[in-house]
Length: 266
Image (cartoon, rainbow, N blue to C red):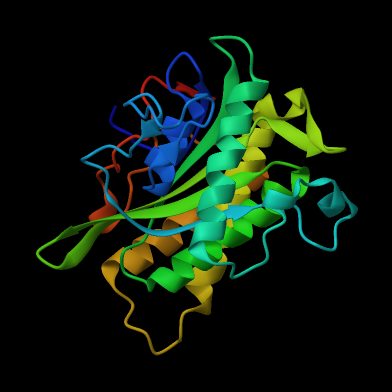
């Protein structure tokens, strides 16, 4: 499916993908389904690998409410991850999280995650893109009570990055009092989608403005700044642009491979 908008939010359901398979596609890591009683008899169904054609995953992390938040103490111990934790700690937490999400959703067609897919400039340092993604996912998603799995994928051609895409896969349920609670239906409202879209472009615009003044003002960078400004002004005025109205600037006009099939866009 060709994505024509630089910010897309979709709903993932168990009918379309297993939660662990979706997590493998976002993180680029193999996930293990521990629901099998006899793990000595491992099959293709117990180990879920990322797609072979998946773009290179250059950054990934798991985000929850911040340590200062009273809800932190309600998180299970495996999710109380400190910033800068070892990758194997994050990997184990990711595997356990999405396995539990799969267990908690009983229906075969249950919606288990909200997937944010956002194009990123290739003309700025990767660290700046990480800063924008982490800021948006922490402040606008995790602090609402979602647990958020984030990643950045890159496609390179001839040694140059030709496409960069951010992903944030968030739980549809808030983790409260030691367990997943009811789904918050307010997160499905169109007004929330529009708010998220503006907040993303605000976060991206902030890192673009942080770039050193003496950095070269390339055509791509100018186009991205213009895109952020247009979306901010349109959304603030209430004239939300159509999904396919804006082209994706410069070397990011092709979407990264979709992590899960047949998503229902909000």
